[in-house]
Amino acid sequence: MNTIRVDRDRLWRTLMQLKEIGAYDDDATGLRGVKRLALTDEDAEARRLVVCWMEEASLSVRVDRIGNVYGTRAGTDPSLPGVLMGSHIDTVATGGAFDGTLGVLGGIEVMRAFDDAGITTLRNVEVGFFTEEEGVRFGTDMLGSAVTAGRIPLAQAYALTDDDGLTVEKELIRIGFDGPEHERRPIPHAYIECHIEQGPILASAGVDVGIVTGVQSISWQRLELRGAAAHAGTAPIGHRQDAGLAAAEVVVELRRMCTSGDFGQLRATVGKLAVEPAQTNVIPNLAVLTVDLRNPDDDAMSAAEEHLAAFVAGLEKEHGVSGSFERMAKTAVVPFDAGVQELLARTADDLGLPYVSAMSGAGHDAQEISAICPTAMVFVAGEYGGISHTPREYSHPQACANGIDVLANAVLRLANQR
Ligand code: GLV
Ligand code: MN
Ligand code: MN
Image (tube, rainbow, N blue to C red; front, side, top):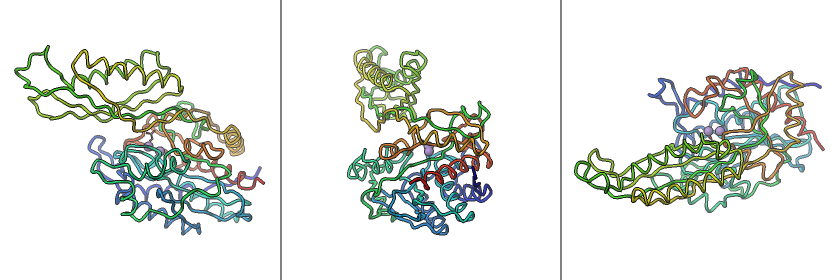
C-alpha cells in the first residue's frame, strides 16, 4: 500500500510559532508556557494566524455561530459528506505547545502534504478547531464541539460567563469570530482527531502512536460550603462552623475514594479552592471548590457522585456547614467507532509504526463529534511521563510527525471511500 509522509520540519515550525502567542514565563517550572484562554485577545490572534495558514493552504474557511472554524479542501465530488480532522487551539492558563494544536496544525500539514503529492480526493477534506475545549474560562469543556453535536444548545453556550461576568456571545462578537453558519451540513463522513496522549501509557510501551478506544466519563461540579465567620482566637473549637475545614475534608475524602477501590478507577481533583473572607484571624464562612471526577465506568461514576453528595450532606451535622453543588459539565463514557479504529490500526501497520490501543484519560472534542459521525483518535506520546497542562508538556518532532502520518493516510483512505 502506497503511503504519504508529512513534512516533519514544516509541522514543527508551525507548532513552535503558534506557541509564541500567549507565551509567558512560568514561575513554577522556570519554563516558558502558553496561556491562551478561549476568546481572549491571545486566542483571537492565534485564530487569525491559523486562518491565515488555512488560506495559504488554499482551504476555503468558514466560521460557525459558536466560533468553530473549518477549512475545506475540495474533493472531486463535493456533494458527498467530507472527512473532518481537528481539535482546539485554546489552552489552560498553564499550558504547553501541543495540547490541541497538534491536531489542528497537523490537519493543515496533511492538506499541504496532499498538495505536495498532487493528491486529489473523492470527498472534501476539512480541518477545524473548536471553541473553548478546555473549559477553563467559561466553566464548560468541549463547548464548541458540544454545540456542534447538539448536546449543548447554542443559547445556553452563549449565556455562559467568565469570572468577570463576560459572556461567550459578547466575547465571540468582540473578537470577530461570531460566524454565520447555523448547523454543520452535511454531517461529516468521519472525524479523526490527533492529540498528544497527556499520560504515560505510550511512553511506557515504547511507542510513538496510540489508537484511542474512547474517552472516560467526566464530571465537573462547583461546590459551595457555607459556615459562619468568627474570631480565630476566641471562638471555641467545638462551636465553630468552619467552611475551610469542611473543604479540607472533602479534598481528603476524594483521595480516599480514589484509593478505596470502591469506585473503579476513579480519579478526583480539586483544582480550585477559595475561602472567604480570607483573613488570617477569621474562620472562613465560605469555601468554594471545583470537583473534577473521571471514571472509565459510568456506574462507578454515578456511585462516586452519590457518595460525595452524601458525604457533603454529613458535613452539616458534623461541622454545621451546608453544601450546595452546581453542575458545570458531565459526559458519559464515549466508545469510539470500531471501523475507524481498525482503519487507524491498518494505517499504522502500513507505515511500520508500532502502536498500542488505550482509552483516553482526558476529554476531547472527538467525544462530542462521535455523536454525529464515525470517530476515533490518534495519540502521540509525550515526554516526562506524558505530563500535560503544564509548560513541561513536550513531544518529540518525530513522534508528532508519526502521529500526523497516521492521520494523513487514514484520512486519505476515508476521503476516497464511495
Ligand atoms: C481537557 O483538557 C480535559 O480536562 O480533559
Ligand atoms: Mn486537548
Ligand atoms: Mn487540555
